[in-house]
Length: 93
Image (tube, rainbow, N blue to C red):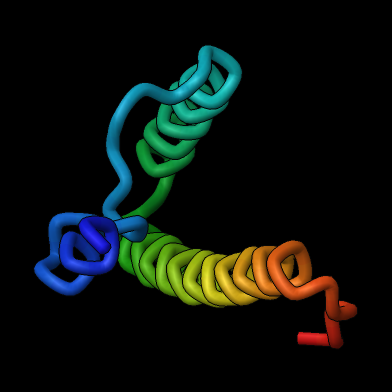
């Protein structure tokens, strides 16, 4: 039960996952940051504030979506394990 203890103690933090990302992800992230910097540089101060509010809200939506996806995936994984161990059919999550 080491994994459960680590999860409980905060040693496992899926929402703060850091570590190596693949090249495709890093390239897309670099392009996104470059485009954001170029776009922001062309804004007035009022537009910069509005864009910042937009990107902050977008990040919040992304975090909530990631949490929902994680929860669903965890439940699905648990149901698959139960199905394998008990030979009972998986019911809808």
